[in-house]
Image 1 (cartoon, rainbow, N blue to C red):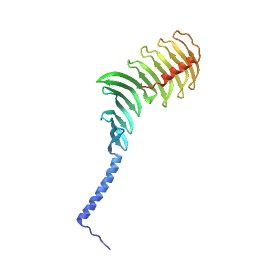
Image 2 (spheres, rainbow, N blue to C red):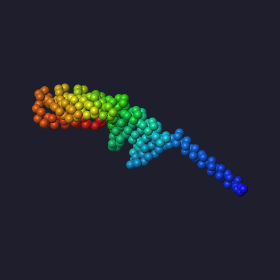
Image 3 (spheres, rainbow, N blue to C red):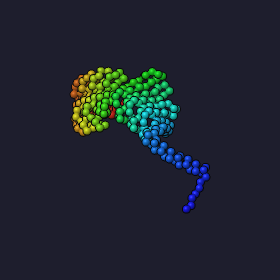
Image 4 (cartoon, one colour):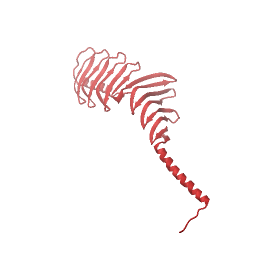
Length: 242
């Protein structure tokens, strides 16, 4: 039987090496399960900074532009946006566009505000409101009056969408939906409250239309009125929700 003898220094070195290997392996396993890592991502002249747990975003995260200015700030829970968020867009040396609102499970909820700050003063402000499950949304004019009320089901337009005039609060347009498409009756009004046009849709196709002038006189369906109506409702319907 051959027995190898090691010098005390070599033995200590082996023991230290063994302990180091076990420690690193245990620490790595501990961090992967319980630890937090600070992440710094730089891309396209932007910087994103936050914490990950098990490779998922957690807690407060920031993004910065190339000049080091904060462009977004908000919380994540298991890689999903939650709670209050703020976004900054620096439009010029004097104007900053600031958007604030809240998320629930990644969906916008509650009141959202977009405003332009010019040298510390608010020169523009617009608000919208999201209801639970993202089903109903309300967009407001700067004077506080309701601009639009609209609904979604499974992220598709649903139910009745209504738009109002800013100064009077009267209805400006109203459309119904079915299976994500305009369906049924659609109406446009003049600022006076008189009906401008009525149309009926079947699966997003304009089947019939009636158009009146501001005096309430029915106009001929001569093609131009139909084209004008289609242009107006399309402009209202497709206008970006801020």
